[in-house]
Length: 563
Image (cartoon, rainbow, N blue to C red):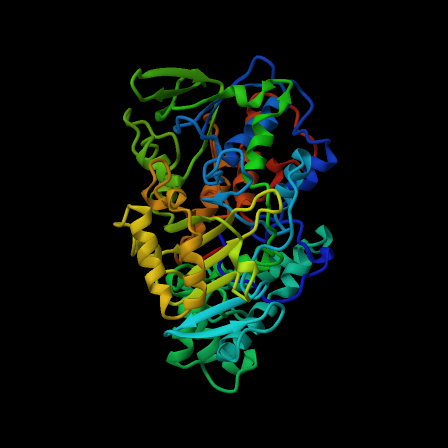
């Protein structure tokens, strides 16, 4: 997931934060310090059930099997691990890839960088984000060229200046996340922004207001503070809602918590996003192919095994009830549930257990029921050639119409095929086309919406399309997912706090993980962090010996997110 880019040249590596501001804990640093281990005592003979074979579940499994635990992973999909990391090869054996889920990773995803290095997963340069490659922007059927490395077109001067100055005002917090000795400064500054009962600080905490309210507060009520000579007009708000600073529409995000947007900037998630030409699915393969003291991880995955209920038994064991054609049960010393929050509620009845005995506390149940997941859709086509590389055509198009974001992807000299992500949308823009299930029908509608504004591109694309490979996904329409990524509404950060720290508070052997439990939904890092947290909790519960400064030392009360 990505909403916007800072449109700056590549920042030096020294500016990459070690951690996320909401947690102030260096997960990757702990593993590097301890040779990749959570602890030193063998868990041989201990059984752990993990629900979900996405990045969170696989991270937990990897760390527990490193210590010898007997792990069983239950995946609803009949054939595929990886969750919303889904690298689809439309032509088997060819390196061209449709990244149906995660598709770009910034350097600040430190735990991802740790495992990617472990498994030899290498980036292949800058992702073709707007302004990083030749980009065309369409607003009200007028087309603007944006040359790589240049500022956005003059049409965007006012919104770009205002947003850039606001984003730059958060840079000191990011700088404080580079060195653990300055984490306290980052903590104090972030607390003042998210919620501060007394001045100085925002008029209202960023956790308690919407993104739109935050923009009004900054660019209407306090516009001079951000270098503007006059407040934003309705036209500026319309332009920003449709196209951001030329890099993607913000309108579908206006209702979400302003803190969710700001934390992306503070955590460095919008800087230097890297392209992985081998596919991010290589990370999943790295986990599955790992030979560990507890066995080869991939052999522990039971595909086509949906979990329908989770029950805490009086003797301390946890029972999983499986659905499908042959319902059954199994018992474990501990269980990690690594799915979306909606799957926890809908598929497993976690918030309304069939036995009537709750397995989570009331605040955690409320959080699972209410945390907001964003919709997201993608439509890919395979082309015979990388046609955009000739003739001065754009590699990125951003529009205020149905397409929204279009990306041309080159998977290297090993393939002649080109990959075009015709449309990447989220929120209401994703919902608009959900009733059109046929990929070729949706493709034609999207191409027609582009024809007037960028005819040269559409005319060059049409004869290159290999129609049989056209593929779409609406994540909100997928069983077991029911949404694409977490984005809190105003006032939901305390719910997020309850979910993230559940691994510290729970004593019945059931632990939650997944990016919708983490602090930055839509990014692999949140899944990896929560998977590692849950694994550490299991190690502690089962009598393992965690090393000093382990994830269990995180502070669940270091922030107040609202009244």
